Length: 269
Image 1 (cartoon, rainbow, N blue to C red):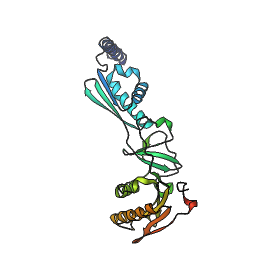
Image 2 (cartoon, one colour; image 1 turned 135 degrees about the vertical axis):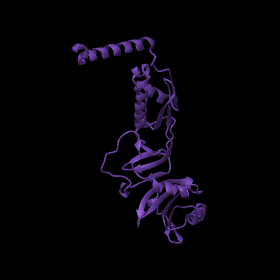
Image 3 (cartoon, rainbow, N blue to C red; image 1 turned 90 degrees about the horizontal axis):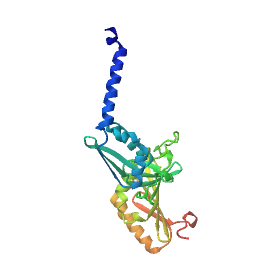
Image 4 (tube, rainbow, N blue to C red; image 1 turned 180 degrees about the vertical axis):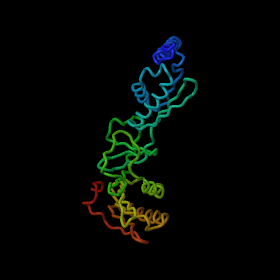
């Protein structure tokens, strides 16, 4: 009787029950994956999914749930994609793997980054993050000094794809106001700076063989007024030819001067 009540006896019973359960499962495989679909934008990503997922997880779908989420996290950290697995029935699942939506091209901390609308970023020079169907914006290039409290140089940045580590509020606000302006399509780069506590935007605009350096500062104008004024000034300068420095940081006026040849980037030479 003492043996029947002992821990050893209970352990033996548990082992027997587990062995019987596993034997039954091996015979009928009733917990194996019954159905799985991958909805993916690029076939290469699907191959990456199966390369990472342990093969044994297919035979026992409760393990597959955990494994698929783990693989999804891995893909999101190494590729510009979003991965979500959902249950579609008993033992059936669908994993959606979608490309992120590139939004901004940003030069920051001596590297060029692509920022997605989903709030993630990656180094464009990292070939491991390159995907055929992903179109990284080529312009404008936003230049953000790290000294604007948008990020810290005291910590190393992770590799791969990771959540945004600097603020894009000033960029988003600028685009909301000026992106639909008729001259914005010719903007090559925009450097974000700060003057007297307000954002200062240094714009390089290229049209044909002409180059313009434009300064715009928040708080110096009403949005519609500066859009109309800049549009009028630039239209006139487009017709005249030459390279110009356009300073719109003054109250109620725009100052135009010739851009020295030494300050151009070569378009007008």
